[in-house]
Image 1 (cartoon, rainbow, N blue to C red):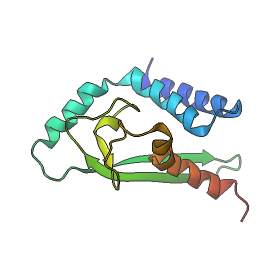
Image 2 (image 1 turned 120 degrees about the horizontal axis):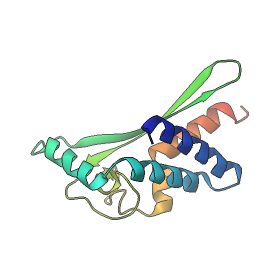
Image 3 (image 1 turned 90 degrees about the vertical axis):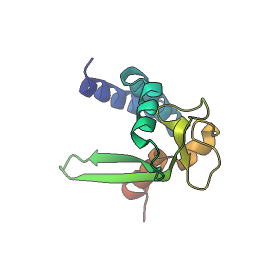
Image 4 (image 1 turned 180 degrees about the vertical axis):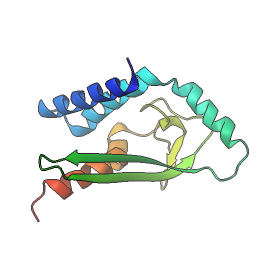
Length: 141
């Protein structure tokens, strides 16, 4: 399956999971995990990041998520969430997915790969973007 088709199917799955009442963090984790697991070998990907960074002392990084909502009248609103941190080596922890084991968020002494699920969902770039979308489109002023 090509990546675009897979992305569309994962997007649809996310909304189905939300429509049936699953918590947003769980729905995002399921769809994110499915997409990541099907497309990339993250152990190899993390090793490649480390190889490219080499001895570079600047290991600053951020995760970013942008959600866009297209309204029937044609206008589109986009909301960005970021979390800043540092890339660590070797990877630490076996929670989460993707690059989580090598991302140490600012203000924490554990990587996303070591972090409690609920804490990660509270501060993640996806959670920030979703909260901005909810606040920007669905909350009464």
